[in-house]
Image 1 (cartoon, rainbow, N blue to C red):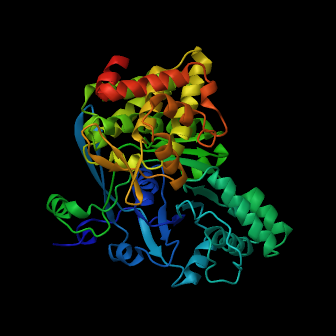
Image 2 (cartoon, rainbow, N blue to C red):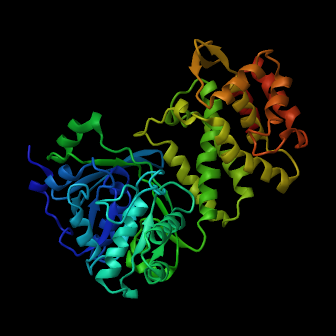
Image 3 (tube, rainbow, N blue to C red):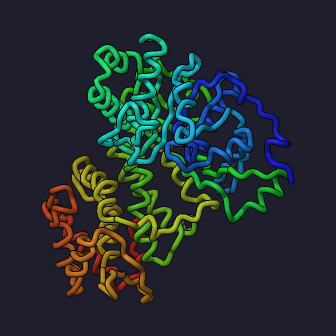
Length: 489
């Protein structure tokens, strides 16, 4: 069977290399690179992407062997029906490895065509590393690489303010662009690169902070035979993702046309403030997970897509979202409801087998971050407890009914089957002691009053919450958990 580059024409890889991308992995190729390819296809952009490995080991040789051409299969559910959209992307010009040829990276810094830098170097990538020097080839940390790159560009163009770059980091940390800029300036000062260079970094470049949302399932190892038969060629870096995507970019909108992906239908939003969109994602998408999966698991389900076929659990989840979470958020109601509708399709995606026990990892901190603000916001807004979120809090406590066994902690479903509890050791030890007497009232009191769980708050001070949670815990001792959920909806 022929390789993809022997059967597919490279349409856009000959365009000027306007984008440098630190990160050649699955996520960026299924997210940003797909958007750029779409903009090229739509005729609103004429630029190619040069990929750069952020670490020594990577996909450079495999990508270059295919001339940068690869397949993206986007799969999910729409209106309850499975959908598979397959596209071939040809906007990648090449991939470089600065650990093999650092001069190649510096040559890109001197390129007049370059306008944009995208990065995904993991959450740990935007961090200061003591001891990095300008003379390193390359420096260890990503911000140090950026500093050296910008200094090379600054010298090449004599500090021309028109040769600054748009930075679009997608690393999953708060204020990713601002944090990258902060560390770049730290290195610039430490390396004594001069006030004029520091001023150029500050005034000629734009470091945006971004929020990204797309599940990328990567190389479909177990389905290669299916894809090769369907496509008629071999692709060693084929990528897969869900259908949904969202990119929110917080930055000066005068920079937006440097990479006009917002002019396509790729769901890209430029904004002055990314925080409301992050809150929307955490409260609705992540909150729907955390408020539902523990009860769904106790009800006997193991995978998200399976509980989405259960009318009771799906309706419960939607009551949480539409009746209890959305009323506490600030964005326009139609935007929130549109996002919520997409969450339903995403959870019902038949191509993603998302295990509930994986989502349940570290549920103590997750409930505090994702669900508690909605619960407390509802109380403040309505003057009463949100019944579904209150039940979710009780289901969380029930799920953590821990027993120490062979040096680990386990919980038990109603049928007696065991499941592993995975959280910080101190959290699991606390729950094991709390549940030692099997007393629902004591458990509710102990958990809700544990300020370490709730960012310093004592939840027993929320009127009626302790009694309501204890009441649900007692009901779970005698009733099927789905029966209780059905009474709430």
